[in-house]
Length: 219
Image (cartoon, rainbow, N blue to C red; front, side):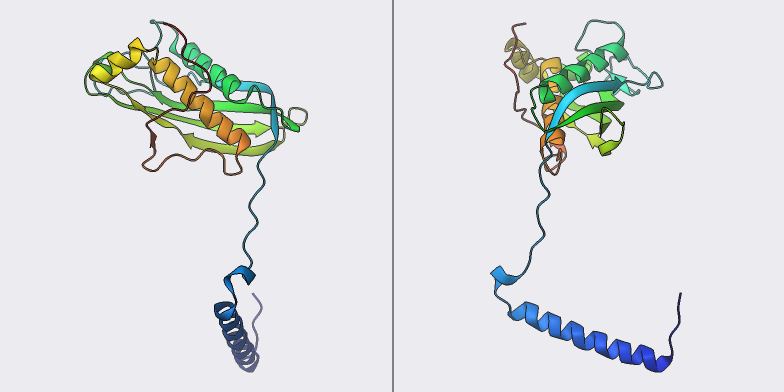
């Protein structure tokens, strides 16, 4: 770091204070419409041409039917089977639903890396309900060069999980855990693909009401 003489420093300091005082006074007295504001970032214009969904096998699956089981993946919305593949399919459907119809100027590939997918167990769903805790990293790349266009961004996309009679009534209307989570993730992906700010979690961090991108399918 360069050092200056005491006199130079004092002189510079005096000029700085004077300048600050002048700018501050001018800003305080200027009409509101004359004060410059930051330009808003433009919304992206993407077109989905590919995706890569990674559900790492290092994540721990729990089949424990308790109120809050351990593990990274807890899923009961499909019959018993390969939970990695089932959760991966949910994300693939969500990306396609959320971004498949976008006709933007820039072709992109979406990458998803799952970190946590903790839906409700049977015991929780048919009693108190809870939170579908979902965390993943989303990256948007150039399909030709692989260069990152947006991200990697860690996204926490929690969704309210129905419980008790509310869960039973929702199930009867086709609003299964799988439907609600898929629609919610589709909306998150679409926001990341179309909004300048990307996905923004609601106040409190948990989405309570989904805005479907496709109609309820008969169960």
